[in-house]
Image (tube, rainbow, N blue to C red; front, side):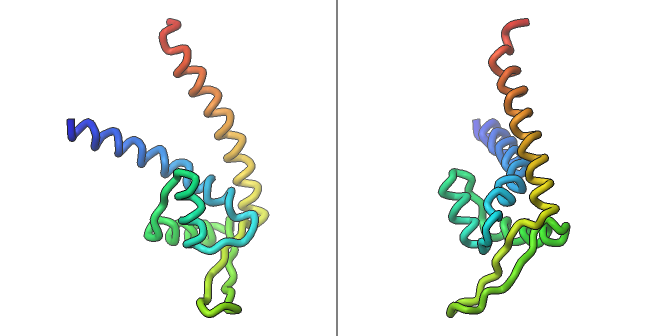
Length: 115
């Protein structure tokens, strides 16, 4: 039973990885900092840890999908991220693909015994 649970968790992690980029981009149409994203995604039942979010943000910034800026106005400086025009285009395409995929998978799951 433990092996089966490990397998299920492995598949769930794999599915989560596939949606994290889309979820993160969706939250950066207004500036946000890393820990703020961690809290928001966790509240939406898509928990993510700091050791996952920060490398992801750096990678997306390196790909030109995000831009960042340091805010030093408060006692604790924070690096805020925001989606770029290129990121918005990618996000829109990913969203379209996501909704089409959901509909197709839903149809497959609901009609699995029709054959």
